[in-house]
Length: 282
Image (cartoon, rainbow, N blue to C red; front, side, top):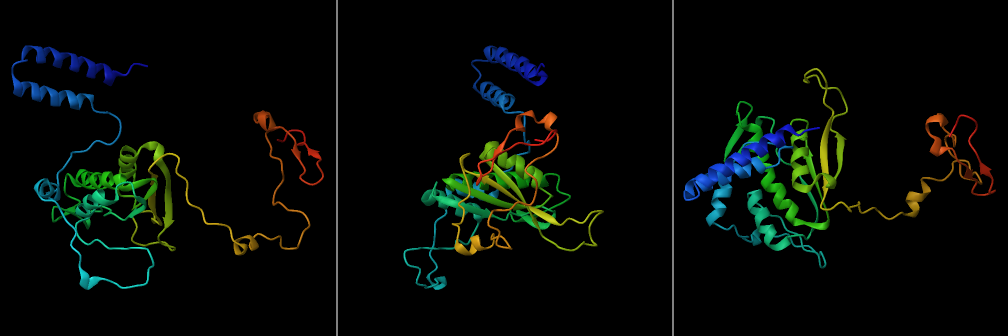
C-alpha cells in the first residue's frame, strides 16, 4: 500500500529544493530551509512532544558541576576493597559528572522518577507542574529524556535499567524508552502489587499495581541468576519418596489436527519405551 505521508513529504522536499535554488545567496533563508528540511526528514512514528529546556541545561552551558567531598558525612566501615558513595544534588548534574568517570562502567541502574500526577510531585525549573499546565506531559518527557540518555551512557555492555512508574505516564515512558534504548532492548514490564485490599478512593476500579520498566543496554542481555544451593534443591524433593520423578499432568494435549508438528513420540527416560500420543492428541 502507498505511504501517503511519505509521498506528501517528498513533494514538500522537492518544493524546498526549488526555493533553495532561488535563494542560494541568502544565508538566512538557507538556514531556515535547512531547519524545515530536518523537521520533514525526522521520523514520523513514535512519541511527539514539545521540547523544553530546563534551567539546569542553561546553567551547564558555561558552568561545569564538580564533586565536593563532605568529610563530616563520611561513614567509616571495614569494606575491604569496595568503595561506595552518595551524590547529593541535582540529578542531572550528578549524571553529567558520572559520565566523566563511569561511562559504560555501571551494571545496574534503578530510578524512581516523579510520576507526573499533577499533584505537586513533579518540579520543573523550581515550579511544581500542575494538571492545568498545558505542557505538563511534554515538560515531563523532556525532563526524562535528558536523564535517560545520560543513564544509557553510563550502562556497561551487560548493564540494565529498572524504572518505576504508574499508569499515569507508563505508556509514554515505554515509547520514550523504546526511542532511547531501542525496542529490541525492552526486556519486560514488571507489574508489582502495591496494595492488597480494595481502595474506596478509586475512580470506578481500584488500581492495585504499578510498573517497573526493564531495559537492557544490548539485546544479548540476560539476568545474573543466583547459583543453586542445597537449600533450594531441597524444596523440590518428592513428598512420598517416589523412586521415579513425577508430573502433575498428562504428557499429551488435545487438537492434534491443528498441531501436526507436535504429533511425535517421547522416549521414557528409564525404560527407553517410545510413548506416542493417543488418537486425536499431540
